[in-house]
Image 1 (spheres, rainbow, N blue to C red):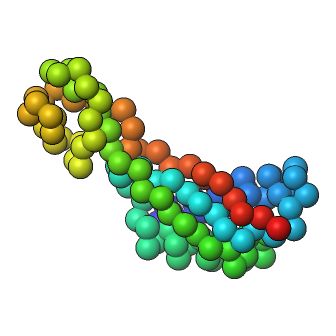
Image 2 (cartoon, helix red, strand yellow):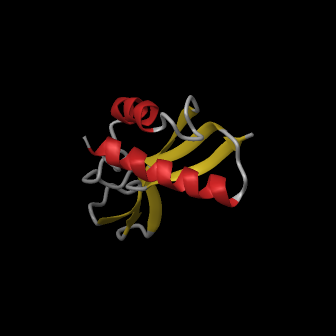
Length: 113
């Protein structure tokens, strides 16, 4: 389950930022997850609760924000949202698409005390 290692990385960032900014506790963590990231949200939520035990983020709420997949269509020269990496362009039906986003996962912000 790679979601456990993702949460370990999230914990490290939270702990580093908490020390740098004298944070006593983290109440909410908002994470942006791209449609093509391969992250299993239920597994991430479970791993988050387990990995945050004993940290400044223990008991923090995890909010996951979905980011759409986007691609550049070289047929119509537009950036378009796509549901699948192999989908045709929703505007022109062309098949020459280069994905430009949707595989990312990042911490958007923290609600702290």
